[in-house]
Length: 329
Image (tube, rainbow, N blue to C red; front, side):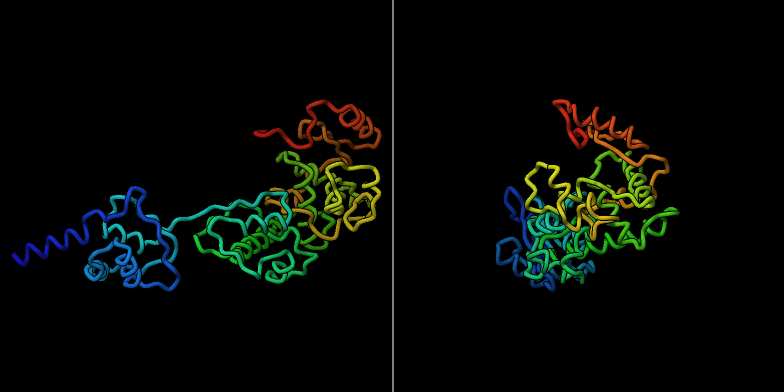
């Protein structure tokens, strides 16, 4: 009888469904937590009735090591299932996407507003984040990589920020090692600046290298880049969505209608494709381009041809004119 009773208890403790409710059980295992402490906590919540027996099973199976994070244990799970999930670290994960063309400030706000992200004072502002990454506040722009990041509950904004920063450094170095010949960049940082201009100028993947070619040829010929996104970035909060002739004459460090060469820093977060285009521009003779109104551009080799294209596409804008591609294109 004693053996039968023991087997019944073992069956109930290990193989019977846990009392989890309709939606299962969501709970957090903090860093440094032990399996025994976690089982005691679950006992206090009425989920585990024989924690010592469950712990003995875990020792027998060699599954006493557990991982921190947030767990969702579905309804119908047993104590054995629970031990397996804790041992394998099957934690709930979250996703956070930083978009190409965003500014550093926008990306930082997105990171800090991420679901289950722990916010810290050390990443509470652009200035604080710059110090954290070992950068000067004025040169932090462009230095985190736009991508989708998967993380666990309890991840700090510092961890995500550093991960995105290191990713950008790694991608830039990889692309720099595969760069083309005859480029007007003194460093990979200048290529990063150029990539940010390309990122802001077009959403058409097929045009990136062609726009890079225009910019590179203009730099090599000593021509100003004259690209509107740099003007807008330099205006900052003074830009209200309407770019005027006065804006194009405004004296800012970023206004490439006024300054020679590249602006002092990137103006946005460039993706890998824009970085690759900056380092591998398409050969050709075009020195100008103008938006056609469907999200693409007309490229011209001469000023005469360019002025004709401006009259066609800009001065006689269609009602459905847009500077970026239609969604889905």
